[in-house]
Length: 105
View (cartoon, rainbow, N blue to C red):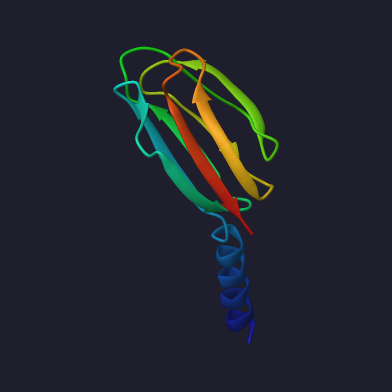
């Protein structure tokens, strides 16, 4: 009985921690590696700089306002999206870099 409870507790903890996804969006050749991404509320997106120069990732969208600052090649910065809606993401250094994240319930 005790082993069953421990196993059940472990499964519940694993299920709780895996309920949210972690997506990676690269920044390569002065562009985001995807133009659009659909995620669920509570998911996290890692922005990975794959270029040999700095990028800055930000959004002024009502669904998620953020500015990750400037970061060099090989580094990433993360954002968790708690609200549903469309989030327009840009790079402050390279104005042609744009993408949309659709956050759904």
